[in-house]
Length: 389
Ligand code: CUA
Image: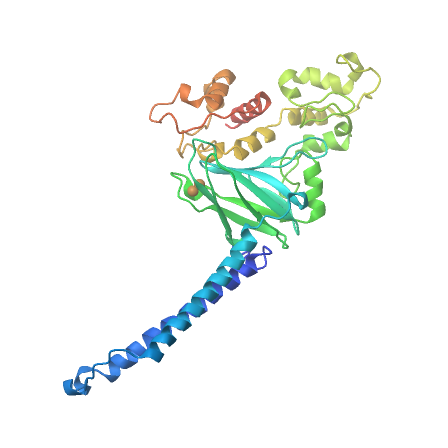
């Protein structure tokens, strides 16, 4: 929780802290130099110690007045110098060619980060930010036009910048320390303002690169569990020929969304006897028949039907900021618990794309923005909704 309490988490944090402490100590000095003499004189010249006839009438004291003007001017210039020079470091963007430029969107009530495409054309979109250490990162930040102002605040880095609808603001940082740092919204933006939390995860370069060039939604840290089916899929080399996260054709066809298209019996047959039904444009005899136990085949099929992607999309698009999916509690919008059993896919799709068309009783139109998501993403989210009981 106190990660970044000292000023090493970002390269410019020490400059900001220095400006802060100079302000504090000069302020303490000024406070004591005014309040100290005031208390002393109030005590020294208290009413019963002074006779009226002893009170003189001073009109001015030139040297004293020049002193108490010149010294504060010098102190104010020090304030300006340290404030301005540390602000300049924060506001001078590094060259984009030497930086990773990430688009950040802040909306009611979540953050999402969109990365540049990696070598295989995959675009990462994440709810938390993942960056390598010792690397300049530029955040290009905006909010949807109908949204409100938010502020992207990273206490450990001493950086904060408004996120304004319809305008692009920027900030940059470079963190030399691997760790996970809190991100908060620092501009009151309505009901779920205090839940607008995220993280900046600073990683080792190699770890970052491995994730970035992969199509994994979040880096394969120890706490990200790989399902048994995925393990079998990868360890059997399926991934070498079939992309499952993208529509790209590697050697064989992409298996993205395959769970929706075929039933378990067909998929099992396709693994065990691949030459029986070869898709148009591909050649028989390329994929070897796999000998796998029934249990393993079942796991792989479960993986084809997996709902991890929908869950990631549900979170990275900020749905979870307003809709609880595993409890009955009402956050901003209604709970979506059990929604998959109540409505069909067409209705759910409509509710995501054009939410104002049918607003449940007790809720107001115009709060949920329409989400312009590709069909595959909508399908994944709906599959996830249906999977949560
Ligand atoms: Cu967003 Cu407060």
